[in-house]
Amino acid sequence: MSIRFQADNDLTFAIVKAVRRREPAIDFASAQQSELGGVSDPEVLEQAARNNRVLVSHDMHTMISHFRDRLAAGRNSPGLLMVSQKAVAAEVVEAVLFLWSVTDPADLHNQVYYLPSLVQHVFTR
Image 1 (tube, rainbow, N blue to C red):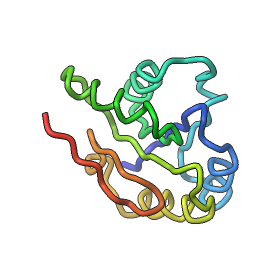
Image 2 (spheres, rainbow, N blue to C red):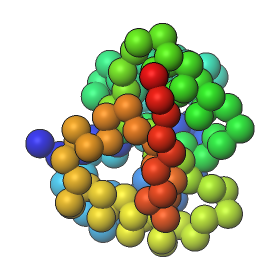
Image 3 (tube, rainbow, N blue to C red):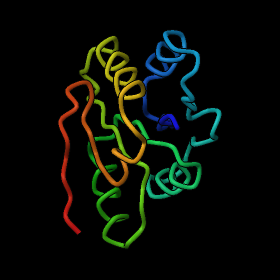
């Protein structure tokens, strides 16, 4: 089973587009496809979980705290990938492709990784 991705509304669409172009087999839903405009962060996380998609977001200010709150409430997540606004898009694309090609979706379950570095943010319950 391959990782399925969900772009947050704030994620640069060029990243989604480049990933899809480089590897058409990747299932990477855009925010527009998933109708995430104006949706709160907790609901975005809920929708991603409901659809078994790893959320990819630029929202460093609030998304991680909402993710932490979700886990503290006993709710699970397929995972969260955080991307700095300053990150080079080509490097982010390579990181997404790498994760998709070598990672089992279970490895991202309830985890946060920063792209393109793949540094993990660990939460305790």
